[in-house]
Image (tube, rainbow, N blue to C red; front, top):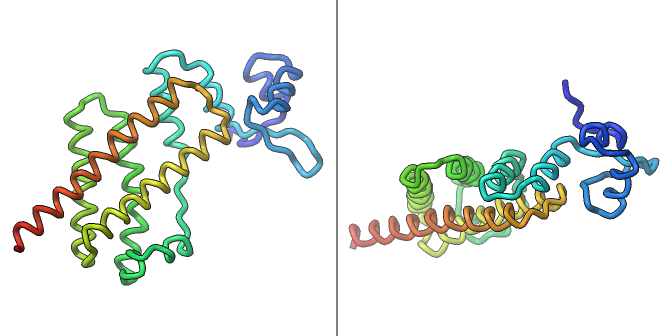
Length: 208
């Protein structure tokens, strides 16, 4: 099994540089590094791999690989305590709360499919399906259109925060990667939001 943590000399060998180069990068904050209680430098393999990909990215296609790699390594953890502070969440029963806790995972899976898709129609369909899912779920639990939007924005913000954490911990500074990341996430999540609102409007029109 490939070790998750690596020493300075192991990382230097993998990157093909002298250990003193990696030491300087680490001390300057140019490469992601962690310190043991004894002060030794240790490196997470996945963070360094993401850092390496980002520093090699010089085209939009290469940057998209960085973004997809970062997303695959993003772990979305939303504690009950954070959700309890949301007014819309307080209105839900236990079954509804469980469904909403799965919403962040659904959005990550949808975004992953969107980033991997080269077919704009398929990407559009993925976003619209998620928007419809959010709308139907909110209506089922008697949330208003404002509360449904707040719920969606909560999970979008949580996803963005998690991805920012991955990028920051891996010291990713590629301008291609950053610009592509923001653009693609914005396009996808805006479409989800628009579908959610359109679906709610259609429900209200039908029931009026």
